[in-house]
Length: 226
Ligand code: SF4
Image 1 (cartoon, rainbow, N blue to C red):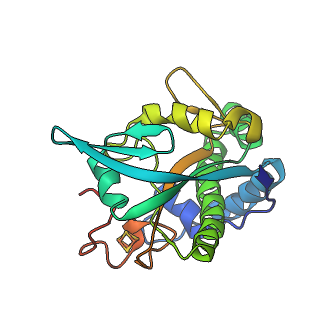
Image 2 (tube, rainbow, N blue to C red):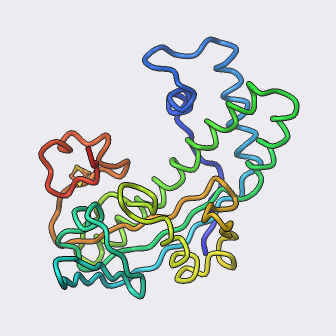
């Protein structure tokens, strides 16, 4: 289990989560964003954990199973994303309960502020995971391997029930304080789990994912499903 503090949040990412398209927010909103990001940084207790596993593809009766350690699943989107990968990291990261408390409090006093906290916290957990992802990229490189974009349960056809495997394999409640609700949502809410495939082929994937990659239209490994 590792801990980081002070997460650098991109202002325009928060605006994007708030629904601004192309035009920047007005001065008052912009100041509120800066204030909320600062408060969230004070309240957050970010933690992450990752572990590496072997990846094995098996095919029987026309269906392909993917084994990542003891995690077993069947997903055409993930098969695409992990094509050629022999190993993968499972990752879990969270901002802790502080941001959830700030959001809950502001929902009582100001719905506008609550929306900004929500957007800022969403941008913050993504920025945090991008940082962890870069560290994983370096770890892979030390082994002569290259990372694919991260892939989370619930994305495309990858079932959300895999959250249970993440919780058990990474011992999430003990290592990073993430628990699952009955409907498999994570608590704290600003948490992420992801599979990051490792391959011997350098595809120079961008950490932020296929959605922002210039090669997404032609790439055989793209996780973008449309
Ligand atoms: S589209 Fe870009 S980021 Fe996605 S798998 Fe291909 S090279 Fe990697």
